[in-house]
Length: 185
Image 1 (cartoon, rainbow, N blue to C red):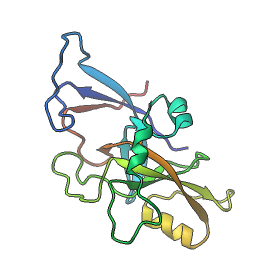
Image 2 (tube, rainbow, N blue to C red):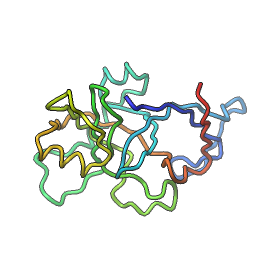
Image 3 (cartoon, rainbow, N blue to C red):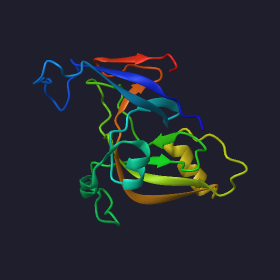
């Protein structure tokens, strides 16, 4: 598995949910450490944090917050063409063959993002190799859909919703107020 872990330090000045944070206690932490995961978007590595998920087993296994109400964001299927939702697609390889593949990403990360499709809420699709002895790295949704067309992989839609914002592009900016510690721990 090509999963990388790093530490993201979120400084108190980070703007969250559209407003400046107000600390009600002088003992409130000034820095929060969160695991950073790697994924692919459009042949580029991006990094994200995962904070909430609708699946109890995955929440327990990863130690993130179980949030069943996020399932309310899942539209009725089959979804009519042209109907937009807040959910994007994230493709996960449960066998650990490789990092996940996102269908969108902020461009660039931060307030200047011009990507109108990006959302930090993802509907999970699992990907399995039809011939597990010959997997190769899939680095974009287009490459994944081509692998489906060639019957190399099977993609299965789940009802699992995950909140995992992309916070860093391997070759670009990060969110304001975020410091990346590139040392291994």
